[in-house]
Image (cartoon, rainbow, N blue to C red; front, side, top):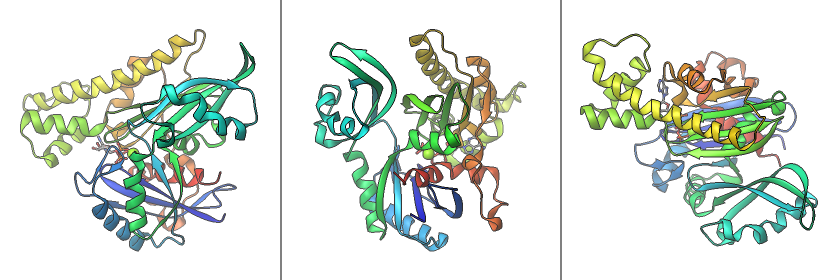
Length: 346
Ligand SMILES: Nc1ncnc2c1ncn2[C@@H]1O[C@H](COP(=O)(O)OP(=O)(O)OP(=O)(O)O)[C@@H](O)[C@H]1O
Ligand SMILES: [Mg+2]
């Protein structure tokens, strides 16, 4: 396969990245981003199919991508994960057998879910050797509207991938280094936390919170317009120095809401570590627009006691020469779409 486009349907915009030779030496050949009207997408799920299809058509007109074959992402609260032990067998057999193992874990009939399994270790169970791993289930209904919007824009979805795992692939090329690493991505409305041991995902949690919660709190509690709230959030952030008196109410709200989010991330990491005595997380690789809040990386590192490193935008992939001047923020926004394109090669 020579070229694939990953499409990330975010809360505020759609982004697409075309990757050439995604399976060998990936290089980004084109990318584009188009804003979405407020309310057309919520937590990664398309609510207004026609509106999003129009945005996707513009995206294709702007980006001049060389293919219409796209890989879509799935994230959001309708993705579940559980630890699961299955009898040892080749991976394709394990995949086929998943529906028989999981019905009682799921809130919907098995045929309404997409299932996947990430093997972690081998062990022995009551009835012989087993493979311990991570079962991931996504409710199909959550992705139907996204597929409909993409199809209506004249594109052909060739794959649907889970965003948290795509991010691991995109941000930790070649599995990253050895040891236990937390990949944390804070979006507008979702925060993905994946724990990766020696390159293998061991745990995933999707927290339904993100940067827009701060903006919304400022709008509701200080009667600011969304634009004013966004500006106040970016300018004040989690300031270390005491804010000027007139900024105090906004600064307090940002502290409260962002503080809850940082705490939720810390608790998620602590939950994993406590369940596995003897483990410790070496570092947190942080990404997503919400992570750009001033002072957030530092707060997370102080609270968790774990070093935080900003992710390398688009995993450090090669960018087309004429686009190298794109800002760090622009690169960062494209990470999910890039990661989805990489994952399209099964
Ligand atoms: N410099 C900044 N300071 C603070 N917040 C920022 C900054 N830049 C972007 N953000 C916030 O990042 C969020 C958008 O992040 P991102 O683009 O990763 O989300 P998304 O992919 O659209 O959403 P989701 O993945 O949750 O559907 C918004 O809440 C935005 O306000
Ligand atoms: Mg996102």
